Image (cartoon, rainbow, N blue to C red; front, side):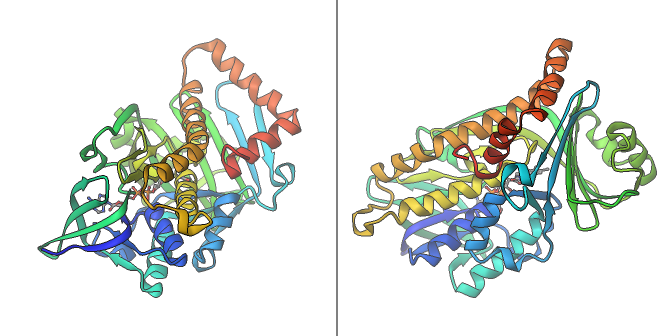
Length: 390
Ligand SMILES: Cc1cc2nc3c(=O)[nH]c(=O)nc-3n(C[C@H](O)[C@H](O)[C@H](O)COP(=O)(O)OP(=O)(O)OC[C@H]3O[C@@H](n4cnc5c(N)ncnc54)[C@H](O)[C@@H]3O)c2cc1C
């Protein structure tokens, strides 16, 4: 079996792997993208993705933005705590941007990127399930199965963007995991007060509930205890909406209808380190976060963008793709943003569900104090929008 050779092999054509493939293809780096699913253009993943203004700028630069069929702007973020006083409101004016963020559908993003890669004639294999990885000081080798055949490719750099399944084959990479014992229930809902660009994040004893403006209604991301997830998923629509109303309150009026519901178990899973010989991890393969505050894909997209910059650093003739120095530089550049994203989402997910009354009161006070301090709000908002470097 002969193996094709590339500068970069990306394993996993989720949104992060595809974004990196588009960046590298655009910059003329020889790249192969291997994706296990057969027909990615038919992906029906129902999750909404809240994208920061910074992600919008990256996707615009990649030519993805203008191909998305539905984009809903977030002008204001309203954060509250269900059982304690205190709330804060962040606006786009305060953050100094035209919009705080946008809501798009995962499957739309997936389809747009897939189409772009096809149009560009990128080396993009679908139905290609990677099973074995080996690395040496010179190169990485990937074995995969496609249409019943065993195939191989080699490259100077292997990028794992597979969501975190394959890195266990790489020496020295370990995962740390924390199970939240929670599920996120996702559905589109309609309310009697039409959405007007406000995204709601409401903290409850069970976990956060987010209502993200999406089209004419909202995309719901409702965190529930694992033990209740199946029961809530199987409720009839009327009972589901009434349960949601009791839980969320009446800030958006009455919940009128909901679409298909889906559930996702929630974990924090992060790799340490994120680089190894001729290998780098990006996106969910590097860090899978709680969806509170919608950070996961935004962080993964910055991983992809920064990695593409590291590969294309000027003067280009001095860049040794996949060499130890290049990987260390990339890792150091991403460390602060990555740690901040993990700390931010994990703290929000844990603190607001704590049953210590004093801590709850403190959080409520924190939200109110934040609301009275525009410079601090601006600081928080800009970090949510552009990552740890603000
Ligand atoms: C309910 C929910 C809501 C969320 N909301 C937001 C939000 O509002 N904003 C935000 O920024 N983030 C959000 N996230 C996080 C976001 O979905 C992830 O961060 C993002 O999907 C990560 O993309 P990825 O490409 O790294 O990984 P994935 O989306 O997991 O893609 C991995 C890809 O690798 C492929 N693959 C796996 N194994 C192999 C193999 N052996 N060979 C070849 N291919 C393989 C898979 O088929 C898949 O296509 C949310 C997550 C959840 C669960």
